[in-house]
Image 1: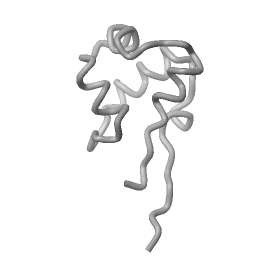
Image 2: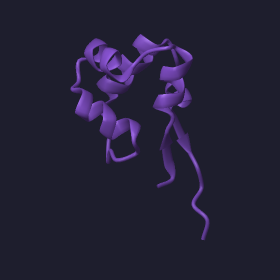
Image 3: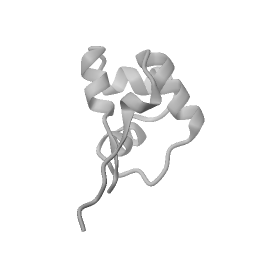
Length: 70
């Protein structure tokens, strides 16, 4: 998948666990896990905004485009 979610990297930098982040942004730990493990098909802007607010980061620090090799 060309979009890579670097959520685990930002969580480690902020020393925050998945359960704590899920609670602070208002989603279930299961849904956060889906996002964190590259299984999500989409993300709501409101969820992305909440993640950025809690982790004090920019969307580009969480989402990355990697070109697929032909």
